[in-house]
Image 1 (spheres, one colour):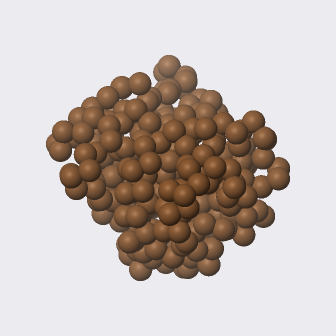
Image 2 (spheres, rainbow, N blue to C red):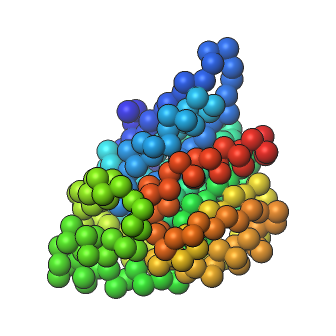
Length: 265
């Protein structure tokens, strides 16, 4: 783990894994995790990806080992985008392959919109253009009433289907419920103010969109609209209602990502 501090004084954690051949100069691949997650959520992905790419994993502000913003300080999606730019600067690359899961995908989309020169390719997993068209705001009173862990347990079918390893599901619930509840409430509430579907026409990088075909958290119909708005993008549906495709379908996700990258680099 390495750390850096952004201009607003917040400390961020990131990780670099590179098991490529020592004589190669590999491209950099930046992984941006989902809300309530952290860099460890990519544990099934890194071994395969790091053999071909220098893999950078950032803990989004307020998550993992990155600092939680003070309640009286500003918080926005734009700040998360600036953090992603900052970590690319930290590792010394002008551009990278950007991979975003769920809310990490919101950051990735905005990065490709506002900083196109930093994005070689874009891959989005279970990530609509913001959380406005969802029922996410209903989570917060339920969490307050039931408790974080019990809420995740009783709504787990939105995130994992019956094919998921029960031990993986148990680990996810423990990890996700360990987050700071006040900050997660702030994070989710802010993301529900965003719907930037119409901005996607500005994305020029080769783009892969992977979606749960029976999405229960995001607005499922948005994925087809995303494909229309991002010129030349590719859309793959997995036959599941489980939003957490990066966890429950990790092998398939990495297969599709490596195939996409192989055709676009």
